[in-house]
Length: 281
Image 1 (cartoon, rainbow, N blue to C red):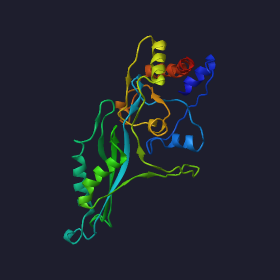
Image 2 (cartoon, rainbow, N blue to C red; image 1 turned 60 degrees about the vertical axis):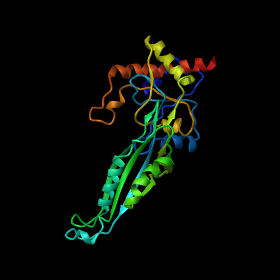
Image 3 (cartoon, helix red, strand yellow; image 1 turned 180 degrees about the vertical axis):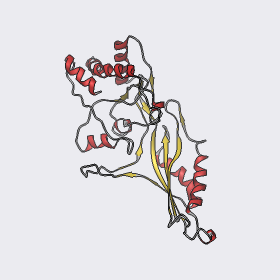
Image 4 (cartoon, rainbow, N blue to C red; image 1 turned 45 degrees about the vertical axis):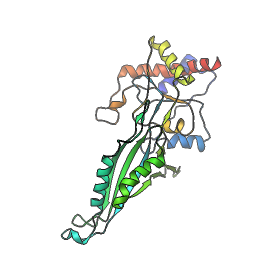
């Protein structure tokens, strides 16, 4: 994207629009950086292109998600006499088993696919490794498709956790930046799609066709991107276009074909011109 901007400048393609490259944190809290950009810095773009891998197709949405924590409490005692205490991990084990059996009734959207759930982390508090833990925590990533709400997802987990004394809560993000700035948000990220007949999608398809003399397809991500803020929360039209295949992302085989990188750079340099022309019609 950065090289695309330079190419645009060199070729005199910076016409009646202003372009920004926005690189930001994502893994620790999807969308928090663009959320702050719009609300704190008062910079609200008209359109967004997300550079996550799309197999060189135009992507127009993905599922949302909500991050939860479940806590169980017990009573510690020496491990030589476990009957004297209450093991918080034993309680949590039953909850984890129940969570692993969830999903049959999750909604399956024709485009975005089915909701899902996964336990992603576990910790416990114990005086020592020869004592019963009196507190246990798990963290849950619940992917939400259309028709599933934050409240619905939390209640589904609560029904599994409550019989074993588990307390369920939605996580919050409030970590300070290196300057000490804090932008607090709940870790709930809505599902989103842009209609296939939207001008932005059509412009993406047209730019690819004109550049490479062949059509490309339209699709969606399985994972989540900062589109959960741009389109999901703020309603700012967004598409995705990027080199590589998301199946390799976050793995030890992470890779991007060099040809994709070169062609994507050309796309980024050309796309604003096509969009501008189509907007003028």
